[in-house]
Amino acid sequence: MRPVISMIDRMADFFAFLGKVAILLLIASMLYEVLARYLLNAPTLWAFDISYMLNGSIFLLGAAFALKEDAHVRIDFLSQLFPRRTQQWINGLLYLLVLLPIFVAFSWVSSSKAYKAFLTQEVESVSPWAPLVWPFYGLIALGLIAFSFQFLSEGLKFVLGLSHPGEGAQKELDDETGIANTVMGDSDK
Image (cartoon, rainbow, N blue to C red; front, side, top):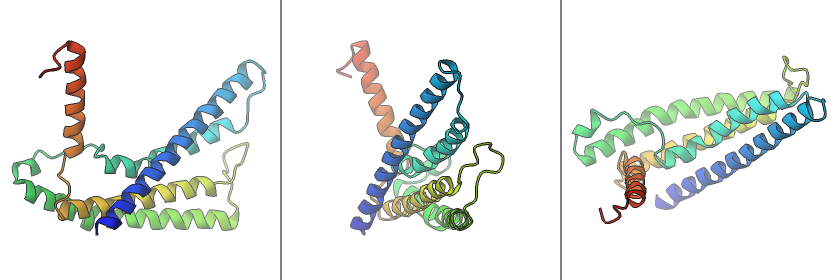
């Protein structure tokens, strides 16, 4: 089971890398738009469309990585009252039996929409540029698929006792406390 979990975690890292590349593309396109608009007096037709398409893609391409790193908001004021192993089972079953099926359904719908847009060569109807939308829909579908797989990975980690709810948040807090102590001259605490 661990090799499967490891492969899914590496997939989340890969999609996070794609999200980083998309951020660079977004920055480059916005810089070009500003330069073209204000220096050359020649605004682009495509910059607005690229910006909202890449923003949506970036959000979903990074979702699996954020789940892997325990960076999503967690409301655990009730579950933290239970013993550690019970917390793991609650989270594992919630991920595997509730969230995983929901996101598999989202993945299916978004993949179907991307495929239909590809077959019909659908374009953005409200844009003067009228770009093809299947690449955007495809990135959304890939992000949702990766998110679904990461729910499987995290759910298995909890059920198998390999992970504890809130571990990532505690690590982040410890790191920030260590940095603050170093800055304040209290590195021995």
